[in-house]
View 1 (cartoon, rainbow, N blue to C red):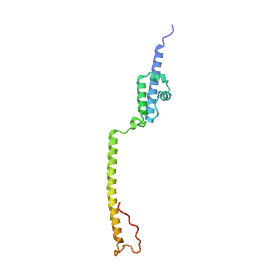
View 2: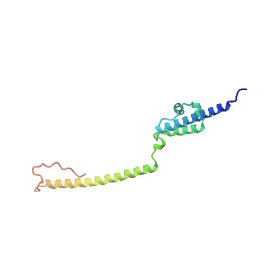
View 3: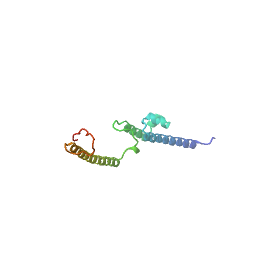
View 4: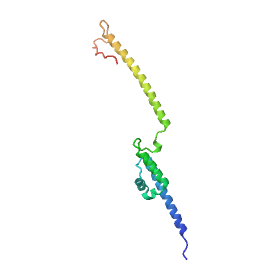
Length: 146
């Protein structure tokens, strides 16, 4: 009577199934990280598994559907979850932009004031009877207020 080697076959089948599942999960993570379009076809090709096998794996199928829906939404770019900005990060960026705008408004105000003073001094120097600081210099045309 031949020896019963069925347990070796069962163990090999389990190892093959585990390796296949690992390949599919790794392919999904890799594709999500790189922003690759995720479909059953592309995942099957990347993981070297069949599409029918993917459709029969409820957890992998749900993850593919979730990622595919996220990547196909027209309002968002296909970015991996790790690269998406958090709410606190967005708030910090908004605060930094607001502070920069306030600094620029202050600088513009100061520059307008300095320009008004310079134009006023130039107008005074162009008045008859007023001596010029630089003899022989022709005055440039006067620019109106800002």
